[in-house]
Length: 131
Image (tube, rainbow, N blue to C red; front, side):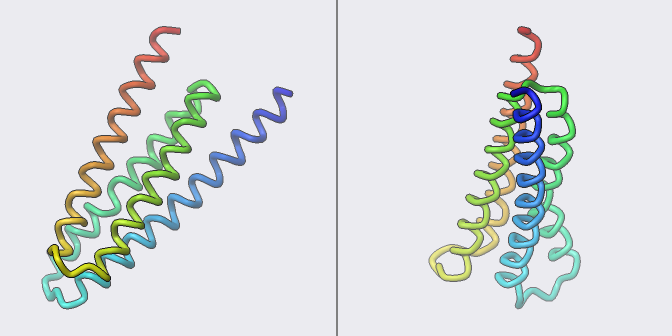
């Protein structure tokens, strides 16, 4: 049973990391499509760093989860899936919605993603301290 649980956790981790990578690529695609008329290389570079930063943060945070309980790891990997899906949905709607400026979504989604990531890390740290 323990070996099966370890296999499931490893499978979930690998799947989450692949999904995270694909989400980062998709987010960059949507960002570059939305900013295709932008001529400033500096602005495009800054947006690229900002949009990919939550994905990089989740990747590095996933390295910390190796010491967590199986339940906490599953919770974290599920959060990785959810943040990736929500980001892609919001970014993809930028291409079809014209009411708001596209840059707003590419500024606010990473910010909110970082808030969620930091909240999860704080909760996990407190839970591990109670053990």
